[in-house]
Every structure is written in C-alpha cells, then in structure tokens.
Image 1 (cartoon, rainbow, N blue to C red):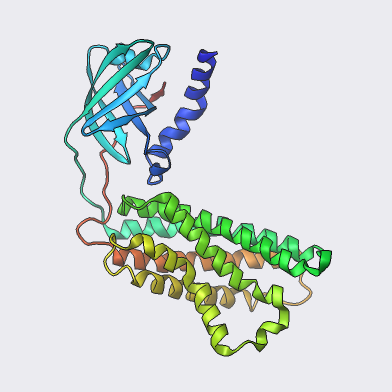
Image 2 (image 1 turned 180 degrees about the vertical axis):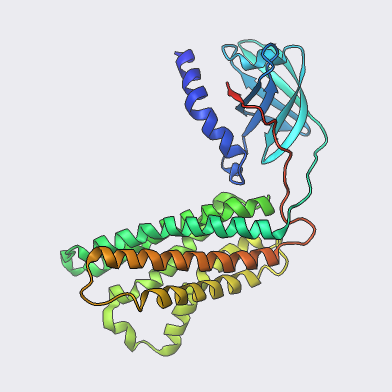
Length: 339
C-alpha cells in the first residue's frame, strides 16, 4: 500500500507542488514544504522533490520513510540545493536513522541574491498576468448575471434579492482570481506579501464593489431618488473598495502606500470608460444573443487590459528603488527526475 501511495505522490503530487514552490505563489505551501534538488549518486541525474521540513536557524530537518529511495543519494553526505520560501539556497545534507524513520539534516550556506531586473519587465509581467486574470475572473459574474437575468425567481417576492446575492458571490470569485494573478507578480517584488491575505482582500473588495453595482437590480428605480451625495459615495466605494483593502497589506512595504487606492480607483474608472467607449457604438437593439455576448467579451478584454496597464504602472512607480524584484539562482538546466 505504501508503495502505491509513494508512486501516486511521485506521479501526481510532486510535479504540481514542485512547480508551485518555484513561483511567486509559493507561500501557499512553503511554510512547511520546500523543494529539494540533489544529484543521483550513481546516475548523476538531477532529482527534484518537495519535502516537509522543520527549520531551526540555518538547519533544516527532513524526515522520510525508509521505503523512499531519494535519501540514499545522501548517505555519505552531499551538497544539495533547496528552494526555501521562494529562495534558492545551497546546503550540505547528512543522513541518520532514527528508529523506523530516516532523518535528513541540511545545513544551509549563506544566502545569495541576484541583481534585480528592470521595472519595464515587471510592468509587462503585471499587465499580462492581470489582464488574463481579470478576463478569466470577469467571466464568472458575466455568466451568472446572464443566468439570473433569464431566471424567473419570484419565490416569496425576493427574486431581485436572490439575483443580487448570486451576482455578488460570483463577483467575489472574480476578485479571488484577480488577486491570485496580481499576487503572482507582486510577490516577486515584495516577498513578504502574504498571498492568502492579498487574495482575501481582493475578493472582499470585489464583493463590496459588486454589492454597490447590483443595487439598481435589487432596488430598481427607487435608487434614483437617493440624494446625489449618497450616489457619489456609492460610486467612490465601487471604485475604491478593492484598493483600500489591498493598501492595508502594502503599508510598511511600499513608499506612500496610500497612493495605491487612488491609483487603483482611477485605473478602474478609465477602464470602465474604455469599456463603454468600445461597446456603446456596437450594441444595437434586436441583435442576436451571440453577438451581444461577443461585444461584451471584446469590451471586457479592453477593460481588463486598460486596468492592468494602468495599475501596473502605478505599482511599479510605488515600489522601492533599490530592489524591485529579486531573481533567484536558476536550477540546473538538466531535465529533472521526480522522485
């Protein structure tokens, strides 16, 4: 049974976990899991595998079952490389038996960082990742909104309320996808930024924005009778909620982090204008459904790209000058064997 479990882990779990540990989203796993790279004693091949670890200072402890074979390459002590919380570190590993377990002790060498790349590359990565993330995320509320608009929800007279709740939930999913895309790039520049907290803040901000956005669905024409000051406040909330919640995580990491909510709100305002500029001349009464959807997709892509480009320029401008992104040492180019 253990051999079957080990085989499934080698084929399915290790490749996925190993790749995740080498991305800026590594902190989804890296608090307790690191990526160990070693050389086969007989084959000379590069072996790469995720391992659970405990750290005490510059020493890591990894416990393995004797049935696993990778540790045999370290029996006489050997140099290793380990991707620890997103950074590639060199170390020296030794093996000891402790009852029915194998204990691998890794002593880390001094940490080394490579030179930072230019800000233009960071902006391009942000624009590409956030555009794709927003397009993928926006598809969720778009599909849900189309479904609830066609549904006859009249149960107890709370149809509009249920429709609004469904759209807000889908909007929170959109925020989570967008937050993952942003964190993927941003954590490379700010390694201390917590991915989970950033995703939660983005999803919460998106849910607040969508709550404001569906008020006309729930209230109908009654919302037009609200005081103009309240409507302006709602508009500011719609545009600024996401940036405000994210800014709490940027304090202490960015200079003048308070500018981020302003830049984020302004970027989304321009992006919404771009959406309207593209779609308004194209939408006409009596068009077939597929054409309406196609125009909406086109407008959504323009909106996503506009927001991504503008927010990317803002975040790059706010980053500290000495270190924009830390590149880590690359692992050997040889094709690895997952064990």
